[in-house]
Image (cartoon, rainbow, N blue to C red):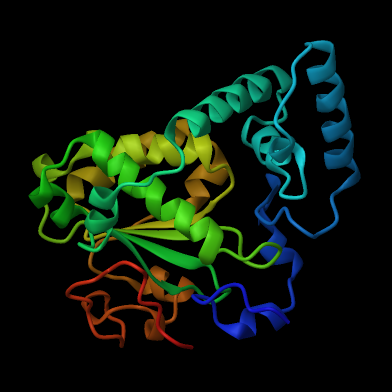
Length: 280
């Protein structure tokens, strides 16, 4: 077998994919797909795909071939828009325009910035999903424009799509946002919102779980209110933690985390890119 993923442990290729890997299921709320490639679709999904293709045809719209291929981008956008065809068409058109205008990112400045550890990949969860780390303290100290931070996130996400995610096995990310030594008023809300919106709009069904660590009390209070206005599947992805990381350890083995997060791996001090992924 040709080994195409140098940053992926070989064991992932022999991993048996379970229904719990393919779908997130919430009691009384149904299921949401997180693996799209190389697995059977439900009859309902197949029907939606055919109906949406007909909707696009009747609207006299056309897409590049990569939009509706084996990676099932169309289905990702359909699910993300609750199978509303009008919204799906609009968001797909916006996504295509975004990719044309923003990719590829071929900037030495951004690649050098990726080495500094503001945003970086390190480790995998217990089902081989890569873990993206965001150091909010480094983000604050760097004091970079939101546009540059967004480009950095896109650069790393595109790298992950090509080198860290495995089609049909591990197609989503775990994101760890470390708020250590960052006061409530210092949190770069605008930058984090920009990155989150970009991820939501252009990397559909790529976020599996997100953990906020050392979250200030006030932020916890705001979240307690805000989650009442969010969809159940969105709320289920977020874990707002203080100094107790137990929920993170349920998801990610300590052998895949740095010591600063209670793991057993030495902390990275420099050269965060390309990713330094620990062995199993």
